[in-house]
Length: 148
Image (tube, rainbow, N blue to C red; front, side):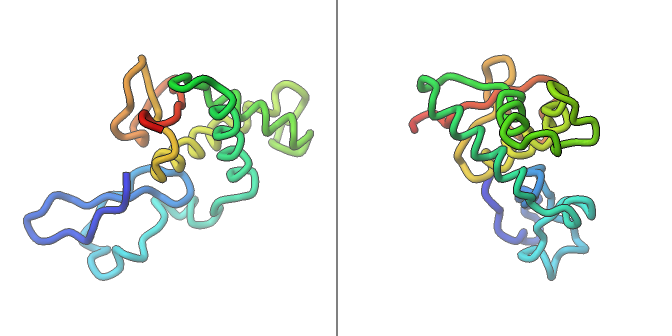
């Protein structure tokens, strides 16, 4: 999902991924002059930015995938657990032992969406690649792109 060029009148709506959460941003008329500078889907993403923990989750996903056979998938919880274990008790609000990784589940899904946007991963549900990871509801799996 690479950024689309600025739309022309009559063309389909252009899209690009949010730099923080990886969700799809769809072109709007009010962004006509600023489309090239639009990077975030919301004020919350603009405020938070990509934190070191987010980068650690991306690295964990790639590291775990590299250790698996080609075509194998992982659950985002595997990356969340790995980062929580490496980060210690300061990860989330209720970071007590085994529960610390739960606070990292949505950030792990966002890390997967960013990897998809860069072409480094695919998100699947029911064995099928999800066309738009922004709209994936429920359990997802992450794998390396086919042909890599």
